[in-house]
Image (tube, rainbow, N blue to C red; front, side):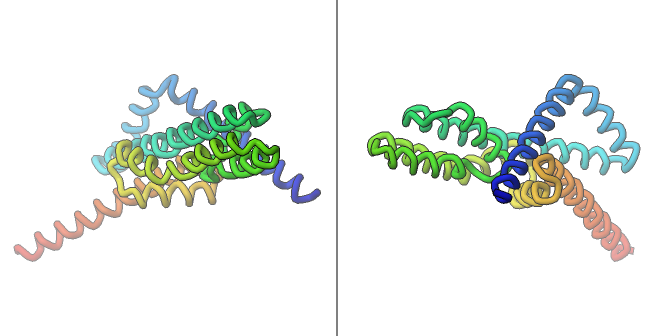
Length: 209
């Protein structure tokens, strides 16, 4: 009983975080140009050209995560939802919405699809169980191919950097950390790279003297 209550509480907290992200995204999108200009000016005042570069890369990291995580989650939950509807699984709509949240949280659609596949087979409907199994397999594995392509299209940053930021941010800050983690790593990656480049240029100048 305690485990069930704990899992229900975790799922509820995940849902609240998901709604918070949607609301914040809507508010930022409404005044996106103004906010972007203000952040860019702040970065320039704070660290000159490197501040602008860091802000730009932070934006690229968010874009990469939005494409790589968000779009992939929509594709996975969409395929899984089609399978649930075709197989006649009850509450296919709410289960699809749950899959979307789980995919965004990097937990995958398997937590919904595997029990659904087992239920369809248990009812004796082998044909639709096999159809759901095939679509579920696609939904549970397609992220391995789609996500890297989308992240690379959204951000000119190392894929491993973005993925590490997503996982680390998720573990540290919850669902919001999916966006916070990659931004922090992208900015740190930029500043460290600029610091190393400046140090190398300074050393080369001293050697010429």
